[in-house]
Image 1 (cartoon, chains in turn green, cyan):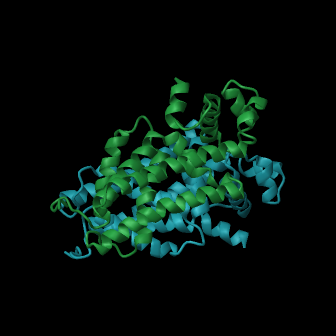
Image 2 (tube, chains in turn purple, brown):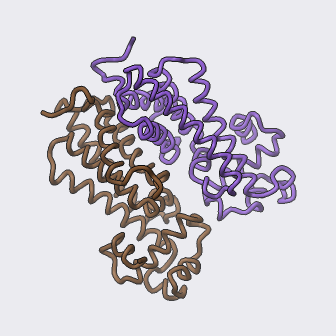
Length: 210
Length: 210
């Protein structure tokens, strides 16, 4: 169970032991916070010795960095994939929001660590993650600016709007749980509609169809 | 400096020593998380002995509860004040968002503790805070539902929309800092405009004026 979950979360991480440690790290950090968690806690939860943990991650910070970096790489990939397959700004934003929101709902425990433990990263590692964040934000901002130029969005400030769009998605990680009324996919679609209206692209009376 | 800040944050809390401890608690919890902070750390940061802390707060959980409860009472008061002074649903939502967003920007360190350390509260204290949260969400949902009934908002689900409106405000606490490009008031106004469009109330071409 745990093994298949970790493989689903981090398909690119090998070996399985490293993924198991990342999963134990996510659970411990999400529950008690990074600073209150020891590598001994994490190793224990993964059924290993602290020495076995160090084989894969030289420090607790390295483990947090792996969780954070993969999370950011995955969300950046979602956004880049949409831009690669779709050229219309309205459809781009709709799909970006659908995927970004669904990711934060589906992966809400991982996402909480990814989004809320950034300040615990050492400076160099923080910089790597900050650059991934800037790339995500830049793509969203550019798509909004393209839409404004094309006359399909009407916003006064692409920077603030991009921040608000991503904010809606990030905050899903804070409140979403398995008890939520919407599935991740449904929530993504609802938020996609809300965001398009926020950007001035669509009202229910005048659906944007062409 | 610190004293006047604490009086500004919690005007209803007496004596000043209690406010000073709350401020030290906010700073420590925001920096390292609730679980990694000891009462000794907090007392030390406030220039007191742990015994002096216990005079005001019987436990670390009691201190967190005070911070969390006052924060939620303040944001509930903002929302209730708007509803008391304004009856138009569009203006109500605009002012609620302006005030709620500005509060989360201006008080971003306090707000981070208020919004992100909830799960550390003991069960009974959590229930008190959860009820305050439900009251805030209910008011926003009711204003949205009133607007839908009056034909000024067009949303399919007042519950999801209320969640999204509050989410935008809450997430400000995560990313806002003194280095942000907008003042809390300006950000509140920008978000007020974005939210009205999200609810289908206004487009730049067709301002809602009657």
